[in-house]
Image (cartoon, rainbow, N blue to C red):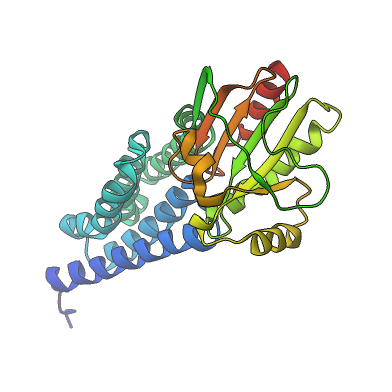
Length: 289
């Protein structure tokens, strides 16, 4: 008895459902767990590959592969690539993963060596992309090295003990503009604390974390939030975000480094945990000033 062939449109509809599910999982994971763009790529690649294999076992329909990957490609292009254009390989690798997944079962039966070789090639490409390309590109995107005069400013103390509220002649000052509602800010905190711990013997380097009511924070809420995370860095408040804006910054987290003469030497806006060199690069930069 012949089995009734599966409708192309049914397969494509299921592929669309898998594509939307992959989109939700990928963006949900990065919002809840980590904003690491490498995690975004890898979770999407695994889901698309598995979904494409499932689709191919019903029917090897190439339009279904395009439909499957389209929700991720379109959303990523509109939400991420407009801001971070160098992540375009996400699209190419996701498409390659989906096509390979759709053809994988047939290739495994007919040309096993080719199937395994293509999977290995995709894995090597993914490792190189995640371990080398992405971290280096992110460092170039966030860092802005300069040597310019700083605006006059004064922060308000939030934590106890000495808190650097303005530049001190002969000392380097690092200001981290922060918000308790900002996921990248929170992910950056342990890295910043580790940098300060490594430089604890450099008494001429000062650190301060500054929040403002623009992030729906108050001094008390900000202090309690940082204390719960056991981060030992002086805290200050930037009323109205005026100091943040005076440096020409947009958004948080944002770092400013002032040298011993009070000149701005580094600004950076944004943080992604895929930037694996953040700790090393910041320590080396501060030591070199």
